[in-house]
Length: 238
Image 1 (cartoon, rainbow, N blue to C red):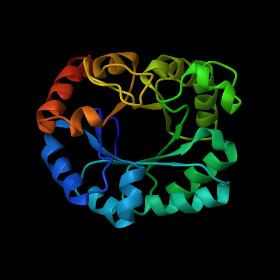
Image 2: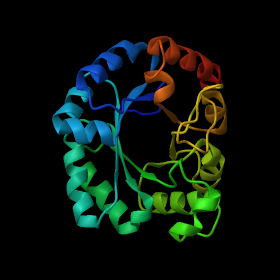
Image 3: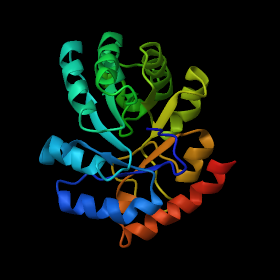
Image 4: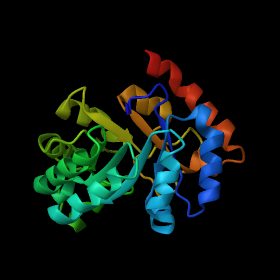
């Protein structure tokens, strides 16, 4: 399944309510390119719910952020691949052996599945890095982990919009960049700290934008999604 879709917006359905997730997915289908299912959804509803969402026919990004020893991650990767997800992620900080194990295991089940790596969470800023043993800037850390992910055979990374250009320079044009931390102008930031508008992120070089609360918490989610799709369409076509 091709993930560089005509519409780059994946809506984040981070809810423990399957009926609401299905209803939103069906309503938003004309205005988004895919669905992102996060830890809250998967923890509450389990594998069968991921299968049910994938059965809608839209690409599903399983945002599981695996980070464990290679053998454990390989087993989990095989199971995610059986659910019909088009893409899932691991933490790049788990290292090369773990990332290679995830990719090999997942593609043994579904050769088309995309495996990407989380670099630095969008809730983290430069001043947070020393406490977790990382003394460089977020941009340098993202570039380091993106290169490691590419060298490990992964298809791309998750990074904030602020590091898109850094990743492009480090990893080239064929490396998939998935950007959360996307907020339309005037939206509340919530717990995101390194953000851009959808148009800014696409112009910077993102392939996929993950947008959650600005759509799902809107008074009219369909209109909110449609406005974002309209905003990014000219830049996507350029």
